[in-house]
Amino acid sequence: MIEALGLGKDFGAVRALDGLDLDVGEAEFFGFLGPNGAGKTTTVHILATLLRPTRGSARIAGHDVVRESLAVRKSIGLVFQEPTLDRDLTVEENLRFAARLWDLPGGTRSAATRIDELLRQFGLSERRDSPVRSLSGGMRRAADIARGVLHRPRVLFLDEPTAGLDPRARRTLWQFIRDLRAASGMTVFLTTHYVEEAEPCDRVAVLDRGHLVAQGTPAELKRAAGAGSLEEVFLARTGRPLAEADAAAAPPGRER
Image 1 (spheres, rainbow, N blue to C red):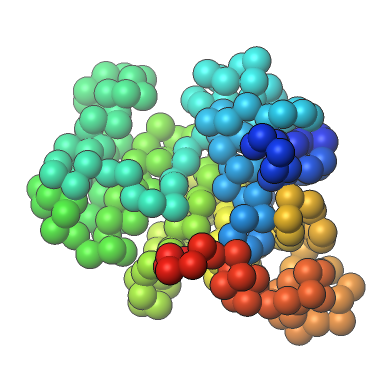
Image 2 (image 1 turned 180 degrees about the vertical axis):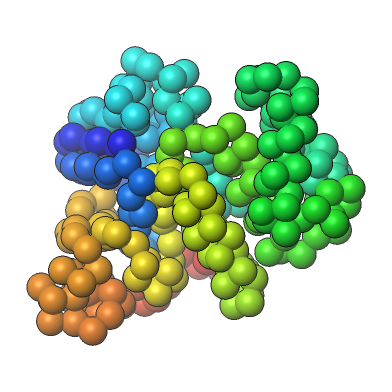
């Protein structure tokens, strides 16, 4: 479902991504770990056709991300690290606007049915008429994901979806995502700073300084590293814990 071969990206003299190979299967839950600056978001932006690779190639659902970018965009949902909903519109208005952009098959009635379905699924039915700015962080993120899957994509990219949420909101959001996967069978590509969130993944890749340093099932990675957790795997592969790596990569005075 997701293929990358020798994928690389340079920003001037900086090599952000260097020779990345990926092969993510249909309906797979794939975790992508790495500290700030490792190249995770750059990879997602290339796969989502928001950046052109400097070298190498990538395909989503059989479509080349450079030559067939429109087909790729129709095949994917993307939930950015920062919320992108219009805070002054209601939850339903945001979803209706997205439905118009996607030109959902079947017209207005089909879109309304799909919106009702997602509002129920994400526990937002009672807040459908609430402005997004009035929602809690967890509800805003749930609405963001609902918009990302409105058009029933084959692949869903989640770029640090629980960043900034409290533990309760994180647990609730992951239940929504588990239910969504069970109902749709879509491929989910997750980047996260919370290593424990990658434990349920079918496979996990670890990226460090633009290079893929480990890839396999969580059990395989832990066994190969003689580790009891993915955090310990990250330490073994990069020489530092993920939290420490993030602190080193973050700009001074900026929250991660």
